[in-house]
Length: 608
Image (cartoon, rainbow, N blue to C red; front, side, top):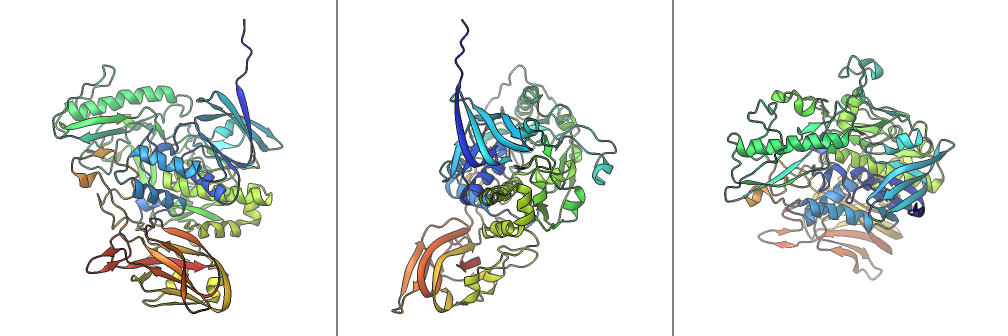
């Protein structure tokens, strides 16, 4: 007898549906939710984070990893600081939990893990709903939404909705790009498997599986750089394949080949030649390839080589990049790695703006996208693809999606009617947009700003970071107030504070080369190489007070344990003055109000 029982179905009605839970999807979902939209985040894996998760274990890189003072802020920095605070050894499972917590416990977000998008309903050039199958519950989840944001990396909604997309490498004359090919092809960058190991105090043997490849010499291994045990600010990114195959439908076959290579590489390091690996033990080897490239959507604008090299600053900038043009050639592992011949690189010296027009579909009216699938040529994609850049793009898309849902607009209409409002929202949320300044709240500008120490003028210059040779910050000391005085009694709702979180990680304990790595892949016995500190300059303790009619100051906000760069707090008082007092929390010959620095460094203090 045939069993005709069907699997369970569950329906969701929401404002914004985000598909894909890498950093782009995480930031898109959180930003949309924080701006009032109801959000469903559908993720096909059991954890969030994409290539940065414990399943793949690639650290988070972005513009700040290549150009000073360009570390991403906004949600990306918020999440990284949370991880630095709670996860000093950069354990990948703790990182998973940080991302899970940020999404799962954010009001307005429904999180569907282990749920793979597999169908879509469309009509009138709109996405009406998407359906995903959740393996853990054997349930189909159908999501109807006003706005859909595809952050899946592979652009799953391209095939399901008919949205225009690009795949492969364009020819020079397609976008007038000197780095492009003479003739276009369908090849892409490949995907990689990571390896994690730790150093012990005794000799550890390694017996490879019989099916692993054997690399007796460096030449057998195509001269790939494998000094990872000495230089821990690197990894086995070059265990890479798939660029010459179908980057979507051949993934299982590619994974099998990568496993043979990865075990063969570790066998080479342990058993074939002197690599200083006698005491090293393999902890983990990935079974999920980290993918770089697949389908890229076509938007109203396609970002190109000239845009990134010439540091484009479009009128509709909503995000930015600065990572080098880092083009992994399709041959991957089987190309000669001597002198980096398997890579095509051009270093960028200035940040480029990413236009809003590159973040929504040209032909599907309510479809947006963020991550490695934005509207960019193959060459431009080689710089936009890194995870911190994907994160700031995700925050822009999530904010725009919430704005669209609130005002009943399509994504293109947001760009036409609300772009200045969108940019203001992003700047207020501590996003950096090159070429743009944050607008000061009207209430702050009506008041007189004074300090008991130093010049506070930089607190109102609209640039909340060191950039282009300027500090843009206020230098103060503990227990010396920064005060807003109003011409008459005024109702003050809240304050906003931007502290220095050491965006270049110059004053953070641990390996100085690690920069903003989320987690370490190689654990040396020397504890200093495996534990990373917290930014010493970040403001830890402060009070916010209002002046009462009696002439006394009343505390309305205070903390001794801040670990974030942006702090927004409630005041809700009628007063003639508000003041911020950085407090001392460390007692030595000097009273310190930070995690180790003798001075206070702030970029903004606003009231509204």
